[in-house]
Structure formats: structure tokens, C-alpha cells
Image (cartoon, rainbow over all chains, first blue to last red; front, top):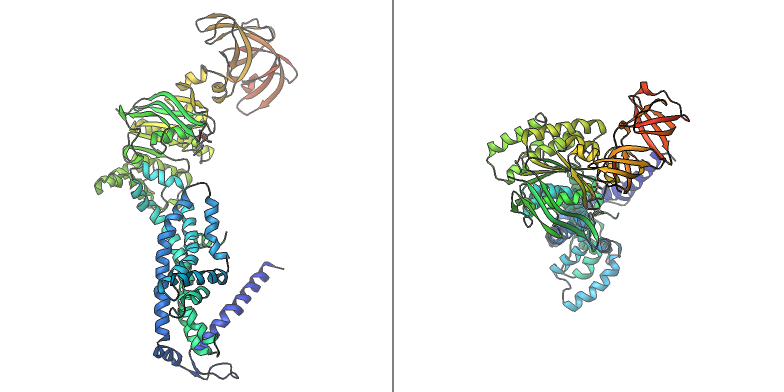
Length: 267
Length: 351
Ligand SMILES: Nc1ncnc2c1ncn2[C@@H]1O[C@H](COP(=O)(O)OP(=O)(O)OP(=O)(O)O)[C@@H](O)[C@H]1O
Ligand SMILES: [Mg+2]
């Protein structure tokens, strides 16, 4: 097959698997009446958003999702940046082990680790606690943050530190004048991934966050995963979840070099 | 005055890798000093010890009589030029050169003057606004040098600064650096494994091997009076023949080759000792068979290689093959012919 065919195939899959569903979600969210027989909703409007707002569900979910995610980013960064500095700039025994260890949360299915966490959290009395969910999100967020930042540190020529020192800069000044500016794109990329991860995390949040911590994905699930299916309110919530994701993709296009985003994935 | 003294300096990696071991070395104020040696002989290690980037396992280091062994690099006023340039990619040319000046907290106009002076000296004053990735390799290294001279350091260290440039540019920048050194007169320690570079630039050369200095001297001394075969082989092309010393008078020697020929040579051996006679290709002459000059050896012309401005002969003498360089108009012999070689200049070493 020609190269173009593959690209066509891939694009088609993405359009069918992602773009179409998103369009359908937008239709549901902004429809006030939509009969299964017609292609388009027969009445557009913000009814579902109002219903959700009045019920308090939307406000609460937005508040939870959009305060937890920045906290997860912040704490993951605080832990990952120093670790990434060491792994990215020094060589030591067991370095590969550390690098692989950090990837474990990305590989182990959350449903499996979630069951274990559930019993641990129960013992500690942390079920349904806000900070418990932040902690659980960090486990998944740290690998993204760490990989991006470590890749950024790795891409810095170690001679730069030596140049800086011989030119009269102390260790701390070298940190601020050389490492900070050169690593910040990696931190930004890591933050975006971690933010997106936290926003989308569902399984672990459901397991350890119930009944109080109903982030957007959990709330959506309530409308479609229970005894009855309510696609319209679920879609309205999804829209709230999707818009920041789209913004993130655009932001990355604009600001982040591809090397750093590659660092966040599995190598 | 900032002369550098290394005293009993040793750097040992792990338990037994002796990366650098220098009993005593004094680099004079204003000198252009070259550390020369093959890969892995400890040039970089020694240089980085002077910079303060590596702590020596043992020994003391003095600059201008002051013990600086325990000072961190930023307190030493010693700058460095790197093989891979090591320019700050997030700063432009001006900011790169100004980096060391800002660290010294100089006033703004002073920084500007010094950056411009250094840039003019390195002929990059048109490039001050450029980003680093918009520069050629040669321009980048000029920025690297300007950045190292702008803070007016006591010493500048160069770690193979030209080895990432192509051959032609390397030769050009070589002379430029020498010129710049003449103008600023800063004590410089220059590491290279390129003997031609060392010859051109050095006031003195230290030839290193396995962490130690094998020979220290002016370029001519190292070339014409090498201490052993290693130094002779590292500096320029040479051939050598095993000899036995018959007579020794000061540095004048009479030696016998394995072929039986007796030759007047020079060296530091005494009568009865065995050694090797080092012959540079340009100190050989092919003479006519009838010649009854002294210092003649017979050999068999094995191969002749035309190099353009000269011709190289490979000649078998006894069991050894030696190389001679001739002017093209002297190239009158055919491979397989027997030739008479006149050894005009030679030097005998023990090992
Ligand atoms: N961090 C290190 N750990 C262990 N051994 C090292 C280390 N750095 C250097 N060495 C060893 O010390 C010796 C000297 O190294 P050095 O880099 O000084 O050599 P060099 O003369 O600069 O060589 P080159 O011309 O290849 O740059 C080498 O045998 C090297 O393998
Ligand atoms: Mg080196």
C-alpha cells in the first residue's frame, strides 16, 4: 500500500472514533428535543446545562475536577522535578530501574491497582476524601510529569553547567540562569499531560472517591452507567470536560516542542 | 602574577584508573601551554582539575602563589572554551558573551564595552543579536572564545576547541587564536591531540601518556629531541632503526646499524647502550651510488608514492622500512632499485 493509504486509514479511524462522537455529544448537550428518527435535534438550547446547574451537580463536578487537577500538577511537579534532575543529568547505579519504576503506573491497569488501593484507603479511612483523590491522581500524573521533565534535563548539554560555573556562576545561579529556562518547556508539557490525566481519570476516582468526590467523569458515569441512561445531561457534562482538552491540544501545538511531548510517552 | 603550579596532582577514578598524575608542573604567566597526547591520556582530566570542575584525589594547585585547590570553579577566575562550544542556547550572542560579566556584577555600560571588545577581537561584532542556532560552527566557537576572554580571567583553558570544525577552518582559527593570545597575553592552557596544532600554537608542550607527562619542552625541542619513541611517533612522522652506540661524546654519538653501517648521530646515550635511531622523512636524502659521503645506508626502494608537492619513498633497510620525503625533481628511482640514503639528521633514544 502507498504511504498515503496508511495516513488515510489512520485519519479515518480518528475521525470515526473521536471526532464523530464529539459531534454527537455536542448535539446531545445543546439539544432540548431530539427524536431518534431525525438526523439533527429539533430544538436547540441550554436546557441541560441549566438542569445540571440547578441540581448542583455541574457546579460541584466542575469545582472538584478543576481544583484537583491543578493540585495534582503542582504536587507532581514538586516531586518529579528534583527526581528528573537527578535522573536526567547524573549517572548512577540503578538509574534504569528508577526510570522503569516510574512507568509502572502507566502499565498496570488502574482497575487492578484501584482494587488494592480501595482496601488500603478503607483501612486508613481515606475513602471519599478530597486529598485521597489528589494523591491517587498523582500516582498516575507523576510518570507523565517525570518523563517530560527528565527528557528536558537529558537534552541539556552537561557542559553548559560547567561553562556557567567557570564563568562565575554558583550552583544556585546556574540552576536559575541555565536549567530553569531550558527545562521550563518540559515542565509545561508535563503539566499539560498531568492536568489532562487528572481531568480524565475515572476508574481510580470512582473507586476511592465515592460517594463525595464526583469529578466530571464520575458524574458523567452516573448518568449513563446506572439503572437508566440519560445521554443528554451526560453529554452536557462531557462538553465541559472536552473543551479544556481541545484547548490543551491547541496550546501544545503552539508552545511545546515535540521532543518534550515524546518524552512523556513510553520510549 | 598568575602562573599556575600543579604539585603532586593525582586523580584516581574508582580504585585504579589513574586519569592524571602530575608531580610538578609550572605554567608561566602569559604562556600558551599545550597539553598534547592520545585519547584517554588524561588531558581533559588535568584541565578540569585546573578549572575546579574535578577535585583532585591528591595534590595542591596554586595560581599566582595562592592555593586554590579547595575553591569552587566560580571563585577561581579561570574560564574555559569547550570542544562542543557549550553556548547557552536560550541566550543570544551578546548575552552569551555577557554571562560571565553579569556574574561579576559589572555595571551595564562596562558589560557592553567589554562584550563589544571581545566580539571585535574574535571578529563576530556583526553577530551580537544572533541566536546561537543561527551561527556556523566556526562562529559558535568564536563566541565561545569571546565569552571566555570577556571577564578578563587569570587563565583561559581550551579543551580541543577546534576539533569539531572542518580541517580548513581549523587551520584558520588556529592562527587567529594565536594572534588573540598575543594581544591579550592571558595565560592559556590548551588541550589537543593534534600535534600540528600543538606545534603552531604552543610556547611549550607537555606530551602526556597514561596520565603522566612524558616530556615537557618547546615545540622544536620535542620535535628534534624526543625523549622516547612514543613522543617521536606522536609528534610528526618518523622511522626508526635499532642501533648500538659505539662512541659517545657529549651528545655526539657514533652508532652501528644492524646492517653494519656506522652513522654519526646525536642522543643522550652512552657507549655500549642499545637504542633506536629516529629519522624524520625530511632529513633523508637519496644520493648517487658513487657518493662516498659519510652517514650513508643502503636500502631497497619498495614503494614510491606521489603526493603532489613531494614524493614519499618507502625504503627497506635491513629488516625495517623507513620513510623518506623527496622533492618531485629528485624522484629518479624505480621500486625494486637499490638506493643509497644519506642520513642528514637523526636522534637516538633508548626506548
Ligand atoms: N568520570 C570518569 N569515571 C571513570 N573514568 C574516567 C572518568 N573520566 C575519565 N576517565 C578515564 O580517565 C582517563 C583520562 O580521561 P580524559 O578524559 O582526561 O582523557 P583525554 O586525554 O581528555 O582523552 P580525549 O582525547 O579522548 O578527550 C581515561 O582513561 C578515561 O577513561
Ligand atoms: Mg578530552
